[in-house]
Length: 279
Image 1 (cartoon, rainbow, N blue to C red):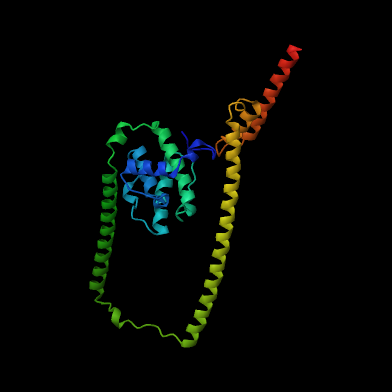
Image 2 (spheres, rainbow, N blue to C red; image 1 turned 60 degrees about the vertical axis):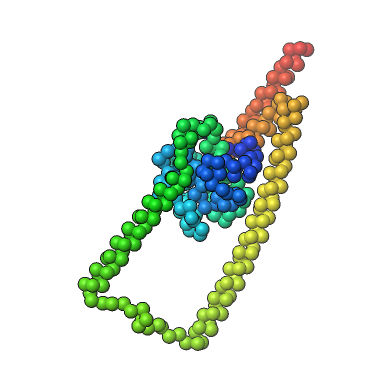
């Protein structure tokens, strides 16, 4: 299965409209932008549809808005990957930022993987899968568990207060007094820290922008090479075949260059042998 897919694989040339159509049709959603799937809930449910009963849907939060809640969803997804022995590292810190390109690449990989499991065919389970019911059931289980914990906590606190006879009155709680001088000094310190952090964030953003531009630049170069290799007159040449072996190698494959060199060497030796025999 396609757990490891090279960056030049056709999976990464699937457009965002096709990805959105795939998600909306399968899960009965109405997403209009790729970044709306940044919470990780969509990815969890896609795996739930592909592998029945493997994903604990009661832990998946479709209302996740904060990065903390989104990270919890990706933890569920990573646990599922580990359970299924899927060798795919999830770039959680990048995905929760909601950047379209990062999320598009991950969803392109996910579509390719899910299609490789069922051959891209709507099997009987997928046909009968009710995504709305699965989402609502997960939400109910999560809410009921949360309310049970809250009720037990309140009961324990009430029993403790009744036993001790103590009653807490928030209006009577004294607030610590703070001198004006210390408040001003503290405010100045916080202001300096905020300025320093803001500068650091700005520098990081500039660095990320530069890296993204550099990545897009080299990706475009690789795409040009791929198009050149697909010319009918060239695609069967030994050099072209060797280049394709490198372009389409899986991410985890470290011997792609050696394999390409070995193939090219064998091809050259074959040609020399044929020339000598003809002579």
